[in-house]
Image (cartoon, rainbow, N blue to C red; front, top):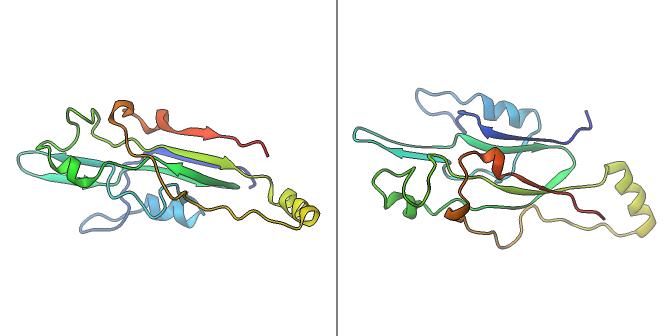
Length: 157
């Protein structure tokens, strides 16, 4: 299949196994060739604290497959910022119990087209997966759904 796919959402799926939970969805997507827009992973996307327990997990993902690259991602808040509020998430600064994930993508030309261009120009641009500086999470644009937070940039080359 030569389609470009971006899959994003609250999958309620764990990133890795821990007793007694077995991660199934994320490893399956990775096995199918999907890549995580955040690289290895963000450290958390949901963090709640109650009187009897605290839960800090990764449930939300932006996964992609196909001929594209991630230009940049929105950084999640520093753990110390969230840890300083007794309820963790949501709180006065971050109104959702999940952190917004946002990624800008660049859709690349078809690989066969790139080979033709390479032969013509003799030069290939080497693209970095992530830029050196990433924007910080802005609480004023915090979203309740990561689906609303994903922006797609199509670069005309």
